[in-house]
Image 1 (spheres, rainbow, N blue to C red):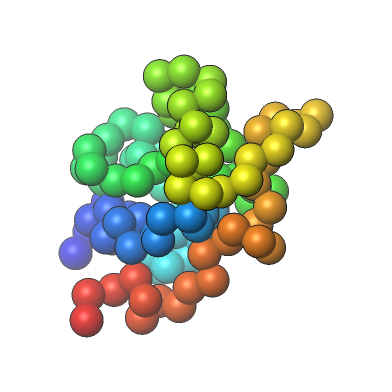
Image 2: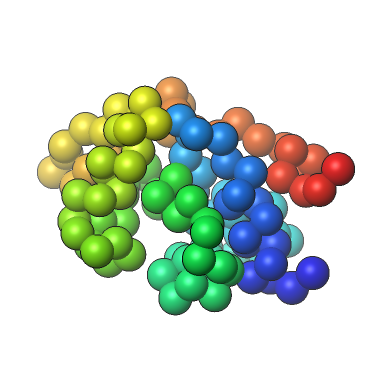
Length: 112
């Protein structure tokens, strides 16, 4: 399984109402220094089109916004429909990772 396939698999396992970070996904793919490559893959569709990319945020819980989505608020709206509280901060829209972060193990993400 290549890096992009692993990204797709792991992202597809993030439950509704939870978020993960780019770094968390990279770590689970076995490439802990490749968080930016995870973001690139999701933005370019390299990991597949049916990936719940709205559930991926940066290490501080900040949403990607218009960088990855058609409109600046689309990621926020998708998360809110799943019950994730998104707050406005000086940094941008933010999710509380302690409350909504995916507390996972590699075994939770890999096929069983």
